[in-house]
Length: 397
Image (tube, rainbow, N blue to C red; front, side, top):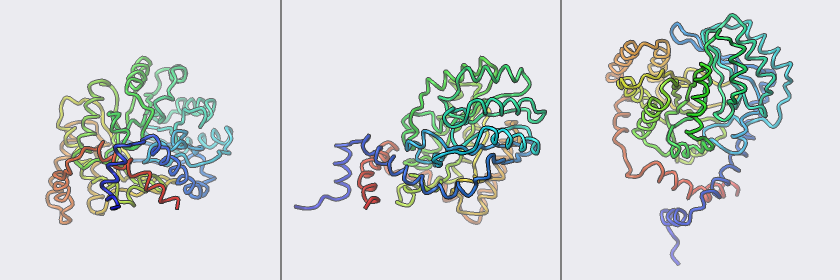
C-alpha cells in the first residue's frame, strides 16, 4: 500500500480534526517548556521588584515589575508567545513586597508609573490583594508621577478595586488599567492561543472605568504567527479602527512580537512554522494609523527593542543593527510627543532614510508585502493544528 504524502496526511488530519485534543497536547508540551525557564528565574531570587526606566523624549515611564509565581492562564498552557507562568511557588512575603517597593519608590521619579507582575498584578491568587492595595496607595500618596498604570488581565478588574482606588486617589493622579488583548478579532487571538477574552467584557470594563474617570489601555501585538506581513499590518490597523469606533477614549499600546525562550512560538520558529515579523511592518502600520484622521485614540509603543526583561530571555525580530537603531529611535521619539503633526514629521523623516538604506532591508520588506500563498491565517493555523499531534508526539520520543 502506497504511503500517504505529508500533504495527504494533513488533509486527513484536517477533515477528521480533533482540535481540542491537539490543543491539550500542545498545552502539555508548553508546560514542560516552562520548567526550563525556572533556572533563569532562580538566578534573581533577590530581585523582588525590578525597576525599568524608559526615556521617551521629555517623558519618563517607570515600570515596577513584581516577581510573582506567574500568570495562572499561562500555567494552563495558554498564550503561545508568552512564558510568564514560570515559578512553582512564590516565597516572597507581603512585608518583603511592601518594603522593597517603598525602597524603590524613594529612588525613582518620572511621569508615568506602571505597576505589573509576571501575570496579572490584580489577580488575588497571584498577588495578595491587601499587598496590592497598600502598594497603589503608597504610589498615589507619593508626590512623584502624574499617572499610574496597572497592568493586568481583563477579567481581574473588579469594580470594588476600582472604587477603592478612586477613593484613595481623590483626583490626585491620572489612573489607568492596561490589558493585553493583542488583537480585537477573536479569530486572530486563536492564532496565539489567547483564549478566554470576550469583546463584550472589554466594553463592559471600559464603561465601568469611564464611570470612575479612569483610563483603559489596550495592548495589541504586531507579528502574529500564520500571517504574512500585509495580513499583520491589516490586523493591527483593523483592531485600532475597532477600538476607535467602540472605545473612543481607550488608549492603544502597540507591541512588536519577540520570541521568548521556552515557548510554543520559539518551538514553531525552530520548526520553520513561524517567521518573525519584519520591524518595518510596524513602521508601515504606524504610517497607516497616522494618516487616518478618523482615529483619535492615543497610540503609544512598547517592547519594540528598547528594553529587556531581567527574568526572561527573548529574541527580537531585528536582523540589521542599522535598521534597529533607526526604528528604535523612531519609536522612542514617537512616544515622546502626542502631537499628530510632530509624529507625522518624524515618520516622514524615517521613510526618507529608509529609501536610501545600503542594507536594502526596506526594499526587501516592500517585496514581502506582495507575498501571498493563497491561504488565509485560519487555514494556516488549521494546518498547524493538523500537524501538531505528529510534531508533539515526535518530541516525546
